[in-house]
Image (cartoon, rainbow, N blue to C red):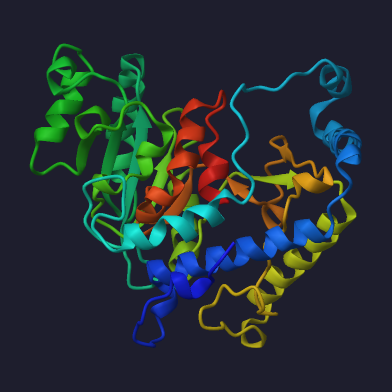
Amino acid sequence: MTGGSEIILKQIDVDTDHYRMENVVFANVLERSRHSEKSCEEVALPSDQVDKEYRRKRKLVQRRLNHWKGDKAMDELEGATNITDLPKLEEFGVIKYIEDTLPKVQSRSPSLDSNIHEKCLLPPEVSCDVSEYTIILMAHSMKSLSMMLHKIRSDLLGRTHMAEVVLVWNGKEGIEQFKNDKYGVRLVSLHDDPASKFRFFLSFEHGLGNHLMNRYHPSINPKTEALLFFDDDGPWFIDEAVVSGFELWRRNSDVQIGAMMRRFEVADHRQVDLLTQSHHLAMDRVLNPKAHPFTSPPVNVSSPFQPQHIPNCRSRGDYLGYNYQDIRASFSAHVSLPSGSFLHRKYMCFLWHSAFAEIREFVRFHNVHPDDTSVSV
């Protein structure tokens, strides 16, 4: 492996926002990934011990999850098989991409797998000047049109601070097919009404196909910086709860603000200790912000003020469990489910950056389509 962050970093003017620039962001991803790779090399086990250690940690994590799953969880686990035939993504594969590919991508437009000709830029930490949000829904089945029409007309179009409602349609049907459906034709009428705040985004017309990540595509071109996502089956959360979430997002617009949280479970003592340290540091940054100044760039491996990446090392037999039963653990969560979550529209550019094409394909073809984990992590 040759080169360093200087491969990625170009000459840029030093200002308070330079850390938000695409090249600086990826330079930090490269630095953190190398740091994690080195950490895994330092704790690696002999190859003949890795599988045994993996099985041991897997059993420990699953026993912990039994508290949420019920008495039969371990019985089901013993006979369980992998839920997908997809091969695992290459460990630290992003390092190779950034070193070999990103400089070429950054030298031309677009930097996206789309028709959006712009470089990505991280959102600001605070967006108190933003007063409205865009609601983004997603559906693909004509059977859902009745419910969607009712929800949009009776509820969503009347939400406080709502600027527009966008229905990302992942089905192959176009406007003409909607006109042949008694519910679809009413949605088309809303879409065509200049005074309406509702519109369609037809994924197939943009060459996207049926993909859960379409709701984050830059071609949606939302009117507002704040985006509020709902699944086609909700939960929809009452207006008062959404307003509270919006206020929280305005004060923390550089992160995802979610309503339904999930977390990872680990068994390795090294990871448990690092998770605890990271949790305490994150909480202290909120409670005592003056003691945790941002470095420049703010996400830095060597910074004592920032929560660090916690490597999950295959060479050590680490096992990562996904606790999808406990949605109450907001302060120890790692993942937010899409429904009821706020995100800055500038993240759309990163989520559809060519650097993450392999992850998007993994989401598309995996049996459970883990877009929630991919977006949050």
